Length: 238
Image 1 (cartoon, one colour):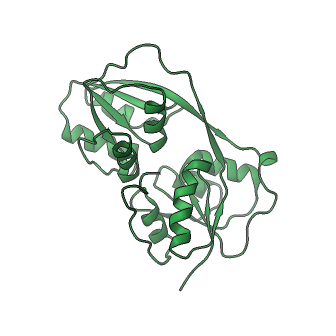
Image 2 (cartoon, rainbow, N blue to C red; image 1 turned 90 degrees about the vertical axis):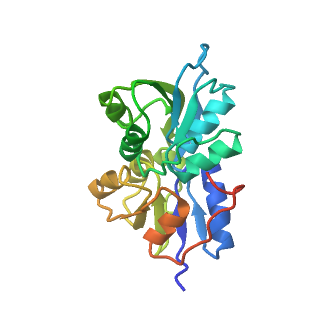
């Protein structure tokens, strides 16, 4: 049975529940957070939307942590992980789109919801072009709601030589890839959580496997490792 060590590179609080599940399944784990989240001041005005579209668990946590309310808006999410965090904070995912990235989420949303409507995207201060571009092209009014900033750790904040032979590194964002490349020359086996994260890995000289869905179970599967059980409701979504 292959029990190579799995290296988790997300923000520390996000790594922990994944690490616990992997260790329960018998894997050795290195928690190596490459990012941290810095919360931004909450908006003073009421958030007015027909739809709130969440693209990450951190976006959900930042929204509720800021004391914001969805009002009359309906809610949709990217992937099962983000949807699970919605459930944890008492919100309902009205569409169950289970998209792999922002582009796929936008396409699925456009197919399910009729424009015009006002869509608010709570999340990071700096975002990728999708899902906004596709939504606007389809006739939706889109507003971004920056609630946190993702900050990459620098070489000085990271250990000098944390890797051993046979490590498999799990990457969940382009920001984490940038932090890794800035700190180390090694290019170990790795898995990208989706096609948004895969291109910067390839550009940096990695040969990533890519998860079919943005969750831990599919990342383990993409690595060719022994499958792990699906999470319980309490464990999922981080």
